[in-house]
Length: 391
Ligand SMILES: [Zn+2]
Image (cartoon, rainbow, N blue to C red):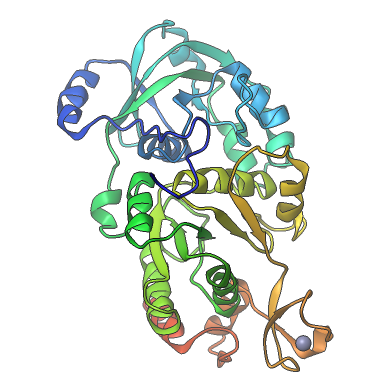
């Protein structure tokens, strides 16, 4: 009997990836079906469904679930789900698709990733989705822009995932499904596990957050976004190497696991923080570190909005708990990392730590203070920026 937090919903993981022995045959049959192209975000959601990260969802949402998720963060059956998981389709293509028809879901290159048994076709109110999920309908927000640009009709129904794409081969030893992380946590004897979401290399501020989590929980899952990011973000393989350098040199062996997962960020701030929590529960995590501006972008969200939203949802919405940690910085007077809760000093005594600041220092060839980032991490990043600069 596992002592880990149970999966979201009915307590059983629900991976929708076809068993390996059936996949080749199912792919062969899917080639005969009508093909529905997916955006890269939709592919990433199909992969998340496939691996069981979106347990207990069984496919792409129908209109009632979409509306409930947008307005009340609940499916029609009352299951807590903070961001709609939907599949869009161009009107011309949707018109020809019958209810009950099985369609093949393909990526931008035409590769089949799964099948959908269509139960419903519906048009959404994009403005309603964006103002609820993103708190803005501004198309300069990349998450909003994708919703505004998607096809006019949503297709709903149960899915079967038939491919995990390049991920298992590209990231061997990093691509763990929820059943895999749960097995590893159990092998290590962990009961409480904190997830640390990242789409950046880890600097001293991230290290501080991660170490607070290790003080409280049996172990830490450093969980990398492997899906598409926004332009200018550091590629996954560089982030992985930088985090390896940090974990190897600055954490006690056996307290940290690094893994990656295939989501594409929506940058929905507070709502996305809730989604991150829900699926981390499926990965077996009891806690999610929520720092400053979690899953946010620009000035769309207040720096601690993602903390506050955990207090606004119904009690019992999920079992995983947020570890809310205030904005972190190095304080020269405290002579260490601190937050507004632990450091009484002023702005002038503090060194703010941000990936943007670091990029600027690299670009200007400025020396980077040790309070900012560990030298082993900087070595990895310097090699990347030097390489990127010379091409
Ligand atoms: Zn201080």
